[in-house]
Image 1 (tube, rainbow, N blue to C red):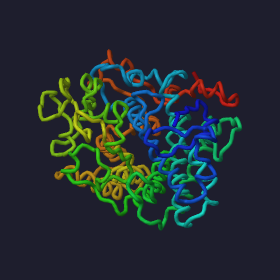
Image 2 (tube, rainbow, N blue to C red):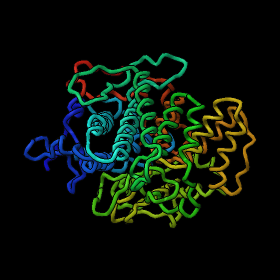
Image 3 (tube, rainbow, N blue to C red):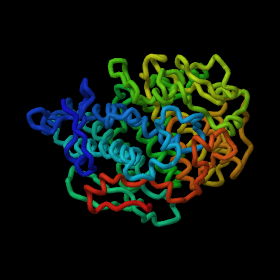
Image 4 (cartoon, one colour):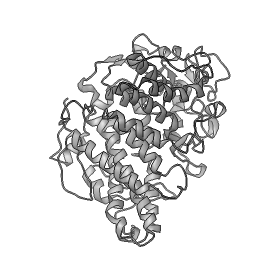
Length: 496
């Protein structure tokens, strides 16, 4: 099949439908080469292919770019923009303009374009499923699960984007600034941007509907599918961003039911296998679908033989590392000396202080294959703890939620007696350590209205160039890609 890349969100709204294929391509839009949309949705058996196509899109390559391997591109962007992931050198150049805070502020650059294209692509496919699945022949139970997953994907995609292209949600304001163009059905209409509040309302509505549809469903085929636990986990994330502490804590607690925290031994196995009991949702990548140099592990693993990893292994912020207790198993994921030969490198790879071994390629130095974590039980404990601590009057409950996770990682951890802001600070340090490299830090800094501060750490001014950005600065908003502005005359740019 010929690959067709649509440059406009409006085109994506109706013309693309991803299905699994051995070539990892989009469907050709020509009727002679395309499975007709009507045929796809004639039966639920066919419609399953459509939802599986969305799962697959999370790790296929986009735009023939090495740095655009689906969701992993966003994950790396989000941590590269923060202060906890350190580039010791410029390496071979990949992600350096993101690290320097220039790429996302350039309307012609790749980061704003990809994050816009990728999530609207998923939204477009979800819209096709939502619009057609009710009329398919097949079990009603299948229709509900397929629709529920599509609704969750649409909500997740809008949530990922609104935190990039809109201002942070602030429950004390009207949130009436420009958000995103809301496309909730297949259409070619050139729609204006809705407000931040309107986008969050649509996200919440979709997730509530997804939870209803997925409740009581049969066990999913594998952890790449979205089930009710994942939908509740997404609802917890959204509530946390909206400062809805009660909902965030409740949904996080419900989401993790039936899952367990991983063991110490499993924590050191490389974060590359979604059968880990703690993984609630992840992208499954198998050997015959090799991801080469656009994989998450081509940039974030310690051992894959890529130029990027050989010359610039990813490191942890030295100040954050020093905040980890000596008895915490997580401390062993980083080498403060840069000389510990127990830490793997690709052949000829350089060593630097604070380099990691958290992520290991599933195929060692010769393969970039590996499953990518998107949601884990640990995050749910952290959401519950943070939400209860910020709600006020629930310090004991917050400390108890934190204790379950922290004790699993550090056998010497004692139940926290901190209260108020001190407890919140402790929870946030735990969050930064636990979720390092998994794509959360930019989102956390922005939702909490915190500044970027890389000063006094192992960030090199020569490599990073940007060491600080004030909270609330316009630089916290991604620019709308110029291709979208040229196509949709009703879409306007963020402040330049």
